[in-house]
Length: 231
Image (cartoon, rainbow, N blue to C red):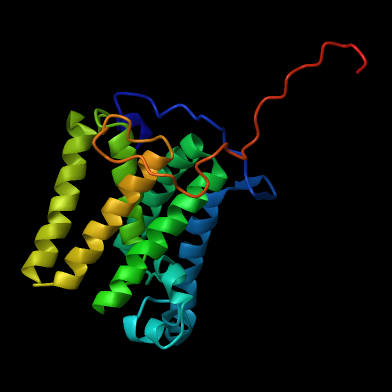
C-alpha cells in the first residue's frame, strides 16, 4: 500500500521502540494489538463462547463485567474482511505509533476504546471487533495527512469522508440510533485525543485538551555525547 501514496510514509518522531522482542520481531503497541486480533480468530474457531465473554454486551457490563469495556475490539470472527481490517489497522497503526511513540499510542487506543464503550453501555448498544478501532486509526492518519494520495491518486481526506459517510448511511438505513451515537462519540474522542497529542494540526478548530500521557514521550531519545570531561 505504501507505494500507492504520492508522498512517502510520515516521518517518525519517536522511532519504533518496542515493548519487547520475540526473536527478530519487535513488538510495539500496534503489533501487540494486531497479534491479539489474529489470535482471537483462532479462539473463535475453537470456542466461540469463550471469545464472546470479551465482547461489549451492554447488559453484561451493567451486571459488573467491566472488562468488556476494554476487550471488545479483540473479538473477531475469521473472514476475509476481518483480515483486511486488521491489516489496515496494522499499517496505519504503525504510522501513528511512529508519530506518537508506543506509550502515547497505547493511551490513544485505550481512550478511544473505553470512552465510546461507556456510551454504548449507557445507550444499550452491543459491539465487538477491530473495525471501529481501525476506523479511528485511519481517520486520525487522514487528519494528520489529508493530502496523502491513495489509489487512483485520490486524496486521503476524500477517502476518509466516503468511509465515514458509508458507516453513517448504513446505521441510518438500519435505524440504529445507538450505533450512530457510538460512531460520533468514537470519532469525536479520537479527534480530541489526537489534538491533545499534537496531531491533526491542520484542523485547529478541534479543541486541544489535556490528555493522559500528553507530556513528554517515554520513547527513547538520542543521548547527548559527553564532553569527555570528568564530572
